[in-house]
Image (cartoon, rainbow over all chains, first blue to last red; front, side):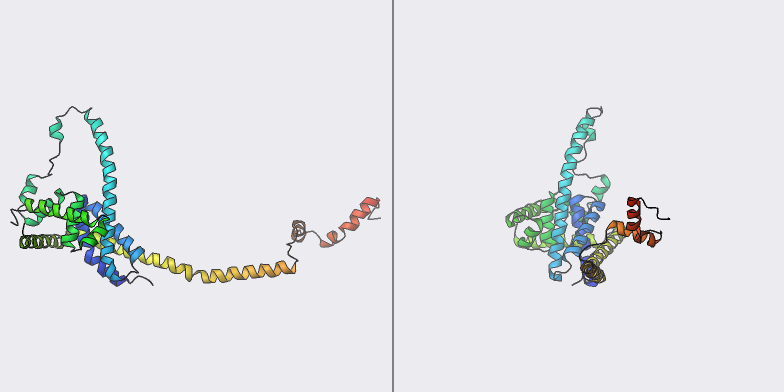
Length: 181
Length: 118
């Protein structure tokens, strides 16, 4: 049985923006997010298009989560390598190390102004979360997945999902209390 | 935190997230559309590949079967042996075949020291 292109096209069109935003929150990089979404779409179409269309949504977000997890693994390796390289270079550059430190919140004055908008505030707040908390929150709150579905998508226990979600919710409420008390 | 508060907070979050996806810039939306089509094309190519295993080789399998059958018949007729290489050389040679037909005779003449011409 072949793929029904119109049905798959409609499905992917219905989830592509959410998937992109989730991946963008996780990677903080639009190009990386697009790559993740593309990989996930190709994987779904190639391997699961013959499954009943009711299964596509959880499968698709599971693949997106797999790709995000892979991305973070690779990033942690890259970061370790870059950390060693920067440590080596810092010995050669006679600069004030405090000046070289990035603002941990990454906020420019322009961004601070934009935070007045609640959507922008939410984006920033989500990006402060550890990625597992962030993704658990997005899957549960935005995609309205059950705890079990989220656990399957994130390949972790239901207990972990509950913990991630609860911590994310607590942090977000604190960060956004000026916008949504 | 009480539950109604939490529900309202989640509702606000969802509304903001939905707004964020609705307001994606045109460039990003265009890229998403492109990668969606790319994925669908990849799926159709894969589907074609699978069907190839079942449809396209039918002619190939038929040809292969005919070749095997033909070879088996030929081998059977020739007592299971292919012509030796020297015979192939003879058949391929442009020389007069009569010379080869009398080759043993010429060899005998040479052994006996008889002049063939005389």
